[in-house]
Structure formats: C-alpha cells, structure tokens
Length: 288
Image (cartoon, rainbow, N blue to C red; front, top):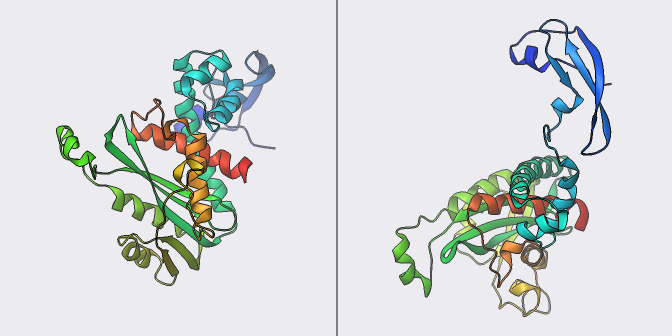
C-alpha cells in the first residue's frame, strides 16, 4: 500500500506521519468517491486526487477520448464538437496531454529492450506559412517500427521559396542541434554497437560517428516518393528504409497539421512537438 504523506509538510521539508482520514467526497466527472485526509501537525487537508497528474480537472474523463482523436487525424476544433466541450478546454487538455505523453513515451522506451538496428531521417513541414519551414527529426527501431525519439527544429527556406522568405528576415537553421539531441538520447535506447541506417545526407555521418563511434552506419541513396503513403513511401521494389518511411507516412496520415494539403497548419513549433508526442505514445502503445 502506498504511504500517504502531507504535501504541505513535505514541501516545507518537515517529517510528518500523523495523518487521519477525514471523510470522502463524490467526484462527478468520473463518478468516483475520493478519500480525504487531514494532517494533524499542520491541519492541512488533502485527498487522493491531490497526487494525480490531472488534479483539479473537471472533465478528466474526456482526456483519453481526446488523445485518441488527436492521434487519428482529427483537428482541435472538430474534437471539441465531437466531445461536446469548448475549444479552449480542448487546447488546455492538448497541452496537458502533450506533457503527459512525453513523460510516458520516454519512460516506456527506457523500459523496453535496447534496440539493435535503428533508422533516422528528417520530415519537413512548416509553421504559419510555407516560407517558414520546420524539420522533424525522427528515429525508429527497424524491426518493430517503434518510435524512439522525435525532435522539432526550424530551418531556412530553400528552393523557389528562399527569395520570398526574405521578408521574414534571417531564419536560423537549427537542424544540426536537433539531430545531435536526438542522437544523444538514442545512446540510452540502443546497444553499444547498433546498426544505424539513413539516407545519403552528407551531414549525418559526422554526427553519427561522434555519438556512435562503434556503430555500423549505412547510408542509402534517396528515391522518388510514391503516390501512396502521403508521398513518404518510395517507388522501390525493396525499400531499405521502409520502417522509417512508413512511420513518416503514418505521421502525415494521423496528425491533422501534417497533412499534405490542409488548412490546419502549425502556429508554434512547441505545439507541433506536443502533438507529435501524443501520437508517438499512441503509436507505440496501440498501433504496433
């Protein structure tokens, strides 16, 4: 049985063991009776709900349904209509679920068996306008398609968009730092001599050798995207990076803001990261 402690005394670094039961109350949100307690030393009252992550949430019973909707291609506004709640409530729950999902996503990966073979690459999207692109650096386990890590970073516009993007000023390229953060996290999730696969990007090899000096690193020449799979699957009979490309296609198919042609665009890269964490947890726990 979990030991009950007084949150006020613990915050003040006081040792307290004199805690008595003080009735209970009925929580209408999920139809449960919640036990209340009182600390004899400081006269502070609290309950079992005080120690829960969704403390003070009045519609906590909507959290799981919202998590599934946001991982199934549903927008925030449409989720508000389907769940019969205000869209501001959905935004607050979205941010809460993003933080919670990141914690459980990382915890579950640490508890899993270390990966032997992994694949990683970048997926491109944008915030507000196509002239302000974002990069999603993603890594998956080759055999199981388990998502191991995700990082979001801004990048400079390129190609035909580079000239028109000048009106937004200089845009720093943060892809290198994001890639290094991801590789550093992967050190805890892989064996000492993993097999690492990616496309032929010339900037990858130096970072991989820095963090995985004993790894077997293989690069493959990129191919044109197929019409299926949101353009992420390749026109190849055998795609050596199929696990990664299939996962990228799943991201575009199940996260509304990553659709190829959509008006539900990302306004802040922090919100894109939160949405990715919600889906990544659902992907690892339910889809694979």
